[in-house]
Length: 277
Image (cartoon, rainbow, N blue to C red; front, side, top):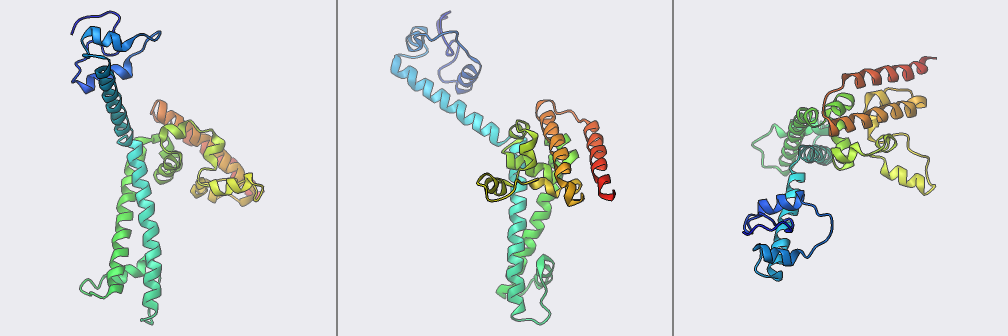
């Protein structure tokens, strides 16, 4: 390929090298528009203008596909898939365990309830009865839930160490999932983090049909649920503020800041002391 000091992103790129073209497009820039098709032909990158646009389309499509693939395989995206699968398995197991209990109640005087009872029925491994078969499905889903929870608990601290330290691995993963990713969570203000998971209540409030929600999924944090209802709003604001900071540190630097946990502990302790006044 001939050297051309006025060539664009395609300069020095082999027309058949899609990875090289992707890197050139992602890293290239120009101060002003130029007659890129003409320059591409002159530099030998393309035989004519039509071929230039064909190569440009192929290169940009490949670059987009690779970018999407990189985003989907990122650690935080994998964590999102895991925690959503965990919640789905748990939800379905609980729903089916209710069906098992109702079914068993129509046939047995000693019928129980919940996943635990379904596990008891599932012990009859050799029975082809549909009730026992369904109980085994519940057991398997519950086992899968437990396995996925262990995976989330191992993975969340690697993806977001400060957030996992403050919120706990499972809640941290759920917050990342609700935001759509660690980057998206890191960009959210504390007030938004505070009500993540309470979107329906928030929309009802905006329509004038309900009071403003004080918290969303962070209610499951023991510092919120363990605080007197009168002071839960203050606890939720304190936690959301620290979680927002933690998400930003995790996304932009990734270093663990133990002082965040200590500061949050002191603040929550102060708030909960009001409960005994």
